[in-house]
Length: 219
Image 1 (cartoon, one colour):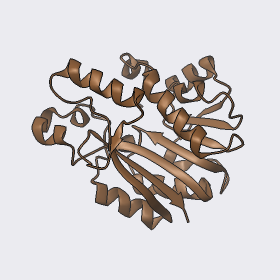
Image 2 (tube, helix red, strand yellow; image 1 turned 90 degrees about the vertical axis):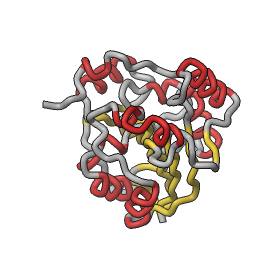
Image 3 (cartoon, one colour; image 1 turned 60 degrees about the horizontal axis):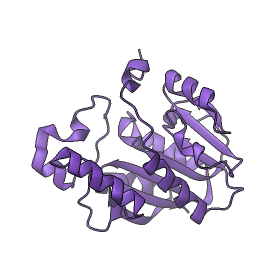
Image 4 (cartoon, rainbow, N blue to C red; image 1 turned 120 degrees about the horizontal axis):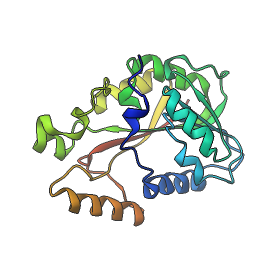
């Protein structure tokens, strides 16, 4: 039985500051005609802020999440799908984005191969995943946020992710760390993280923030 039931999402919130940031990022980098695929779309909140983009596709392994996404709609096509077995044709998308998703995939090597297959030449893959070099991990150790979710089956190092992407003709164009929510005290960390997004500076070159941001281009 899938762990991603309605109960799994009971504390899930929209976090509009995050989705607005990524929507603006996409708007600045890509034309409106671009076909966009979001992997692990949950309730489709990203597409709420990309109304001018007509070619939006969201997939999630959770039947519950896709059901909710279809209710909210946001002018996108949604389908329950395993990233390791994408049903899309080769070279279908100009942009593929996976925020807080890759760590949930049991076989990330197979997933990266599928992502590369459906991405167009010169298309972009954007991913955010827990950063094993984060200061928060070193300080909190076993209490680090990424260790609290048993569905995080693929917590890989930066080097491992780079290897998987490059092996599949995904050339890295940007490496940054992003997010500052898992620090003490929690309330101050949450405010700092919110402000970083509002000020359009949620990521840094230091690679010490909570998550790792990788952007790659299909060769």
